[in-house]
Image (tube, rainbow, N blue to C red; front, side, top):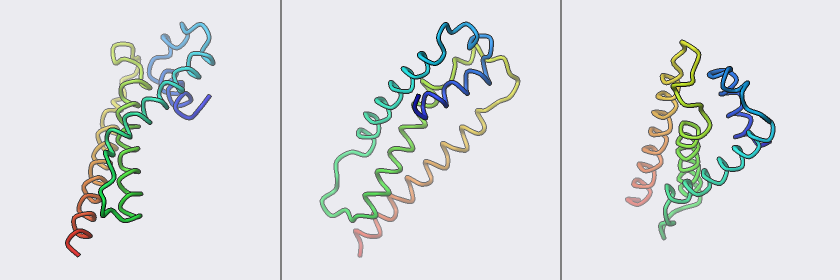
Length: 122
C-alpha cells in the first residue's frame, strides 16, 4: 500500500469508522485506491505545471513542479482520499486545516510565479 492508500485508510478510520468497518477487504481496497490516487496526482500535476517556459531556470522549474505536485495532491486528497462528508461521524471540522493547507499551497505557487517574474526582468 502506498502513501496515498495509507492516508485514505487513516482518513476513513478517523472520520467514518462505521463505513470503514463495512469495507470487505480494507487492505485491498485502500491499496487500489492509493494506486488510483497516484495516477490522478501524476496526471493532474502535469496539467497544472503546464509546458516548460523556454527561459526557465533549474530552481524555477523545481519550484513550479513541486507547487504543481502539492496542488494536485491537495485536490486528490479532498476528492478521493477523504470519505464523503455525509458518512463522517466526527464533530471535528478538518476543513480549517484543509483551507490552511490550500492557502499555503497557493502562497507557494504565487511566490514561485513572482520569482519567475523577477528572474525574467533580470
